[in-house]
Image 1: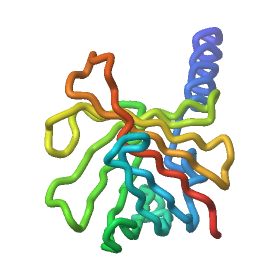
Image 2 (image 1 turned 30 degrees about the vertical axis):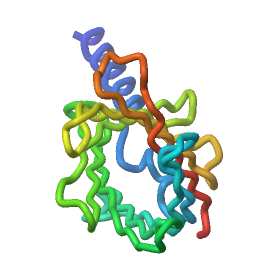
Image 3 (image 1 turned 180 degrees about the vertical axis):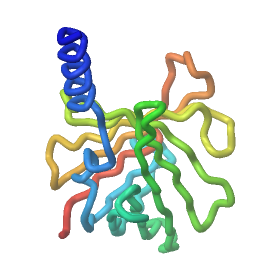
Image 4 (image 1 turned 45 degrees about the vertical axis):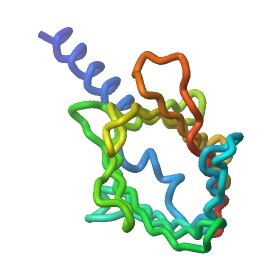
Length: 172
């Protein structure tokens, strides 16, 4: 009986030490300058420059990041947000994004790779369901986050095209 209780105690301690929470994404909190390059390295390349503010939301259960950028080609403003929470059942973070100029929203699974100081983001299909999407967010430098995203028509495709490079620098 004593061995069983001791064993259960160690299981409880070890599983709680590996569990994640929304606080593991604390490095996102703050105000950021955004320089986002869309379709980098292609003839379609352009930039959006602006700010992003991230803070805890709904009693600290979520993180909400609100962004405002300006398309450098035509000076149009774009507003978009991410709402992020931790899904204990799936052992991943869920990020849902919304944009003022697009009726659909994206849903991503974020996996925290603490060993490499990055988040790995995946979505089964993008918001218009015409391609698959993957991304990484490097947080090795907590004052300069680098988001890179790739898309492919087929999930097992070898030809993933980089669709954005988002460099955010902490302002506050």
